[in-house]
Image 1 (tube, helix red, strand yellow):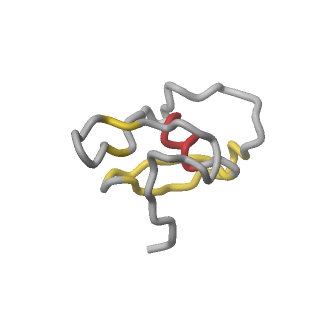
Image 2 (cartoon, rainbow, N blue to C red; image 1 turned 135 degrees about the vertical axis):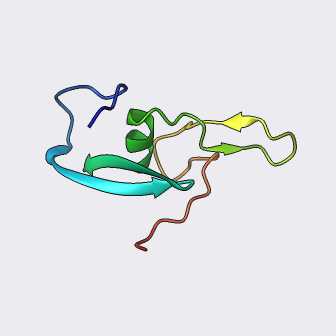
Length: 77
């Protein structure tokens, strides 16, 4: 798995357990213990939404549930 924005070691993820997910119709891979934001950033996704009025790109701003730029539905398909 090629994730240019991920450190090769360290952190609190289990690199032996690869998980697949989709975001905006694209398939990505992450590791068990990743947050959705960390997995998206590791895969090179830096725009997660657009402003409602001017359609300006919005990226990941916070590291928790207070994230103002992400309105996501998380669940199994």
